[in-house]
Length: 129
Image (cartoon, rainbow, N blue to C red; front, side, top):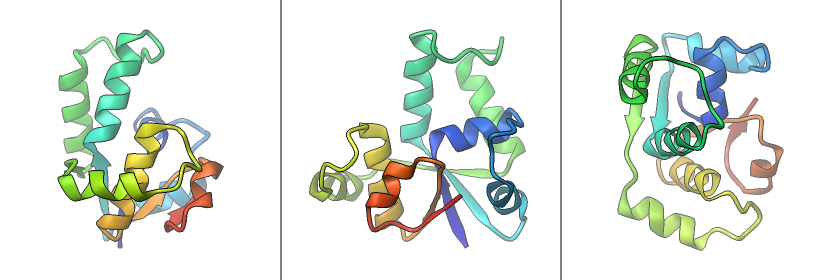
């Protein structure tokens, strides 16, 4: 199976946060699964780090994220034009633009989104938690 990590899930995974569900931990750690991290999540983390809302490393953000992606065998999912078009067609059930793009990417790439965000379940998108 192929999964896309919501931004908080990626952070909880790499920081070994106890809020990460047992199911999410099992899926992410399973060598048979393909795990994706969206460029959208990197952008969200960068913005929040710049605003001082996230502080978790003394390393430059770029180096830290690249090391974590490689160490955890996570694939980077770029934002493509068809993702943007799909996001544009989504109903406004969720106002967060980062989450809306993750939903669009999940649908367009036939992935399952790993998220604790209950609002995302309002969309017809495969979700596990």
